[in-house]
Length: 285
Image 1 (cartoon, rainbow, N blue to C red):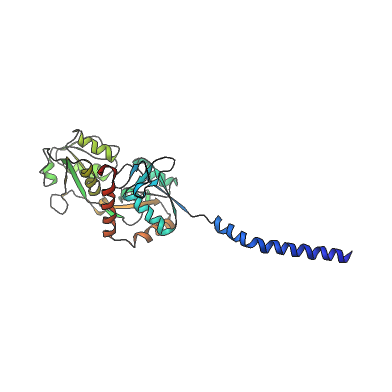
Image 2: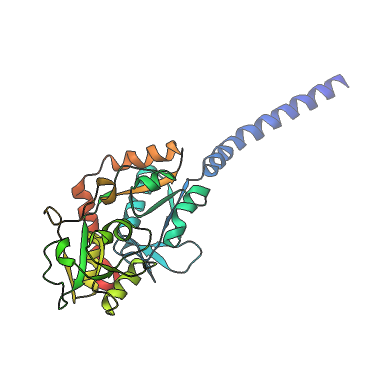
């Protein structure tokens, strides 16, 4: 009986060891597979070319929009892809309207916003920003055959009927600098702002250089007025033209990770990417 019991114990032990040995490789593989890549949820409007836009397919490397059959592309998507490639993350694009972007990152609905946001002191009270991933000077768009086509300064825009996108420094800060301006209600999006100019509802819109360059491709009758570097320019600060990625307040881990990628890039890199975005935007075709 003792021998039989001992034999059963030894046999049982050997079988367990065999199972352990044969299971180890599988267990190791399972553990590796279980370590799924992090997914970076990035919010943007997907309607703000050349920073971001919506398209029906994955041409040029566009990324699926979460919960949609459409795809997103543009400078912001290009930047998000580069960041995820560098950090080893998967990318998820979340489409939100402009006024929902900051609340989404505050609540943790998304990890960050890459959407052409200026790094303003007001926004910095609500979210944290990376270092700039683009530097966007302020410009004015008018009709090439309009009354203000030859304007050489902000002063030359006196009395203009104008508008811009809501909750931007263009509308809140720049338009009030135009003497006797007839400032129309703010437009809910950049495309709406451009349509207002094209349809003749206004004589001018104020925006940033990339948006203006893209608009002139889409609307050949637009003229871009750039007063930057002159005494007749809009009075803006660095925070008005520095474009950054916003994250939830106190999320230093993600902030440091994003900055680690941006630290390796130069203004020439940003310009090259933006030029490509402007070239492939749907309305340029």
